[in-house]
Image (spheres, rainbow, N blue to C red):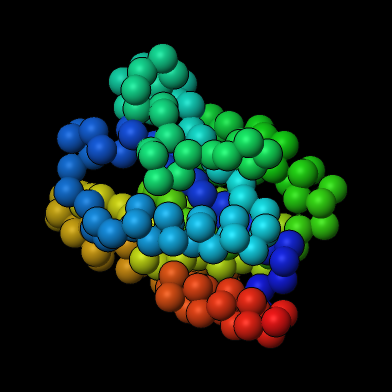
Length: 193
């Protein structure tokens, strides 16, 4: 894996809404911390950062505009000059300027992290892969929640997460860890010296 200086970190829906108890039990409690480490590395190396914010049109959603859930979590607060994309569906590409901006800036590689693994992360990664972007999904910088399947069986967040990543691996994206990415960035810094 080689990350160019134009590889964009795409942080999806890391908003206070994901802490609402209605979501239930989640996996990867360290996801936000890992996203914070990635974000610091991207900022340090001046790679592009894209914050994706979900504003739901569903009246009962914890992501509904006008409530605290819409606010970004502290660990990912955008800095001046960092792009913020607002979406209303589960894909960061639908109804947004994301693809146009990526094409204008000649960004061909996306590193995707955030929530929810089997929803907005997976949908955005699938579209990115189909649109021809070199796409990475960060396994320990994404998270999801327990989910009941069609047979009424409760599936753990860990199972849902693993299957979502398996759906992506090799067809739409390459699944990597935050440690792999941070090591790659450190290697590129060392080579520049």
